[in-house]
Length: 136
Image (cartoon, rainbow, N blue to C red):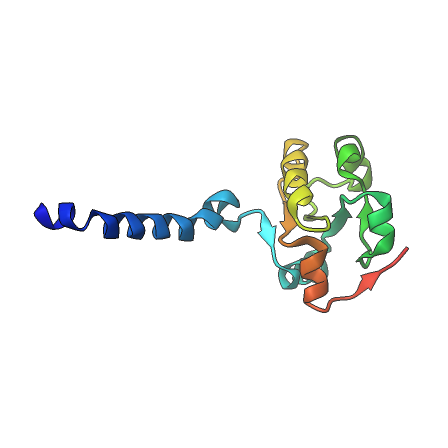
């Protein structure tokens, strides 16, 4: 017991560092709703995933994933069902950084799109992976 009392600071540092290592997994839901660019390409090719860009029209025009459809986040709840008719279709939601698309996943799942996932890092990650970008 005296060992723990004399070295309390070491234990505090160990607990803090462990918590910081676990933080990304806890805040992103364990990665369950996030895909990296390679996984998105595979999903598009193998399962014909629908790619929905939730950026504003100006951002979308500046560059987006080939074949992506633009449904701004503010309009997602009213337009997603019209854009993707089959709720069983895998849906990949994309934005500039990945923040809006994570919110969009929650909206899509609420609408019944259980196969909705987000591109982690957004278009920044897509461009970093040197994948093709289309401009409107």
